[in-house]
Structures are given as structure tokens and as C-alpha cells.
Image 1: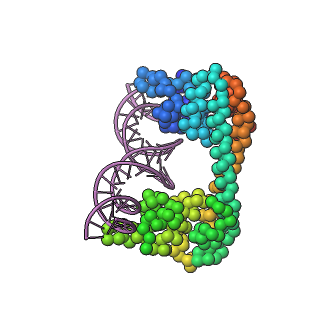
Image 2 (image 1 turned 60 degrees about the horizontal axis):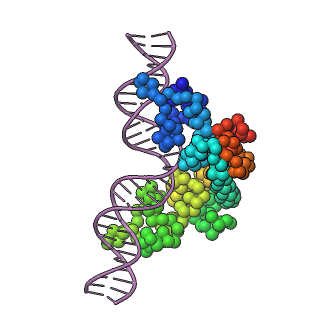
Image 3 (image 1 turned 45 degrees about the horizontal axis):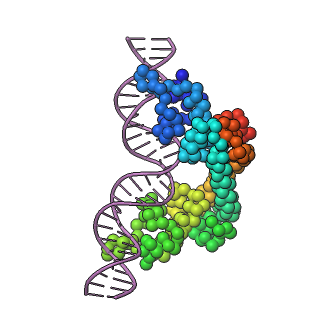
Length: 137
Length: 137
DNA sequence: CTCATATCTATAGTCGCTGGAGTATTTAGA
DNA sequence: TCTAAATACTCCAGCGACTATAGATATGAG
């Protein structure tokens, strides 16, 4: 039996976050001690580790809920789980692409090295005038 | 003179967002019509375009407030503006690095192509078992 | 038994918007 | 000039994924 603090230490998920996951339906309401404190089994520790890992990968609470529901039916085909992960991969790739554009624009903006005044600062001018941009964000 | 709707159309910033920026102190409270509607000058249109651009680049409201404050003192040295942009560039680069790790892990996870059951699905197993990861997130 | 530590619930705050309700104003056409 | 449509007003609630606080209660070691 683990207390909520044990779970927190073992998974690196903060205590209020564990309670939040319970509220969101990712973790089932666990048994309670005489004095109403949460008491978890190993199964729930593993489940929380799963959630943690999926969150680290950036999956939404919603997506994780779906994956957890799927994992309760090991006999079904896994196309759906594959779809969730594949879609997420696509969105990660999109984010990377967008951030790369920002990176290159910021690089150009930052090329001015601060040894003059605001009046002719490239950072300020570039932000004021969108037409100075190379890309099409 | 522009109405709030004109500003919105010309900058692509939604009307409630413009009011929000005013509340957050990025835009000054503009003049009002007889009937209490906001009426903007060209200056404010330009200022909103600046804000929009900076937000597109991912700068926080806080950072933008600082840049706007700086731009009101064109005689000062611009080291501070440079610092804000440079710091932001660093954080964009960090995000890209993190996302690339996720990308490669998701690629490995997704390699299973959905033609079997949940019980032996690599997506589900990989999420449950962190030790299957190559990287150290 | 005492006391420090841990946990409980409920609620509010974070960021950057976004949307709705209900009311008032502006503007274009008949 | 009148009316109807479009626009704008304020205020407040909600999003996602937590995080933090307050004030009360429970647990475990000495």
C-alpha cells in the first residue's frame, strides 16, 4: 500500500497533480485509510507511471484517457492506439517546423548587438515592421 | 479614426483580444465616441501590429510590455531589448531540442502498425514501460 | 502521548486568450 | 427620417494542465 506521497516520490508527479488526475478520470478513486487518506496498490503506481510518461511526451489528458480506456480491452485491435500516437507525432513535427521559422527570424532580429540606442535598435524596428520578415508566419 | 472592428480586421487580432491587451496595459485606453465606443488613431494601429508580431514570435505579454516601455525612450541604449530577444531565442532553441527528442521517441513507438491487438501493442507497452526509451526525458 | 510531518477538502490563481449574455450604439438603405 | 442590421459595450465564465493556499485532520516515530 502506498500513500499519495509515496506515489509522488516514486513517479515524480506532484501530489496535487495526482489528485487532479483522479478528478479528471485518469486514475480511479483509490481505497481510503480509516482516516480518509488515499491508499494505492502497485497497479495504480504503474498506471500513474504510464500517465507521467505519456504527459512527458506531450499527449493531452484527453488522449491519455483514450489510451487508458483502450488498454482495458487487450483483445481489441490496436489501430486506434496507433492512430493517437501517429497524430501526436504529426503535431510534434508541426510544432518543430513552426519553431524553426521563429528561430531563424529571431536570429536575424538579434543580430544587432546592443551597442546603440533604442531609436535605431533592430529588435524594436523588426517587431514594429512585419515587412522586414523573411518568412510568412 | 478606427473602430475596434477596423483594428481587428487590419491586424488579425480578435476584438476581445484587443480589449484584453488594453486591460493588460499593452494598449492605452483610447478615446471614446459619444456612445462610448473605442476610437483609435493610426499610432495605436501600429502599436497593435507590433504586439501581434511579437506574440506570433512567442514573446510573453510581460516581455512585450517591457519592449513597449523601452520603445518610449529612443535615446537609451538598446542592450535591454537585445537581451529580451536573445533570451527568447534561447528558449525557442530549447523547445526545439526537447521536441526533437520527443519526435524520435514517438517515431520508434509508432513503428508498430496497428495490425494486431492492444494486448501486444507497442504503443501501449512503450508508454507503460519507461525503460524502453532510448532518451532520458 | 506528543509532536512533526503528511494528508485532507475546497477554492483561487496561472497564461493568453475566447465566447456568451444582455444591452446600447452606429450606419446604411428605403 | 425611420428602421433594421451590424457593430460595440461590459461583465463574467471557461479552456488546459496544473499549482498554491488555508484551515482542518490523520499518521507514525520517539
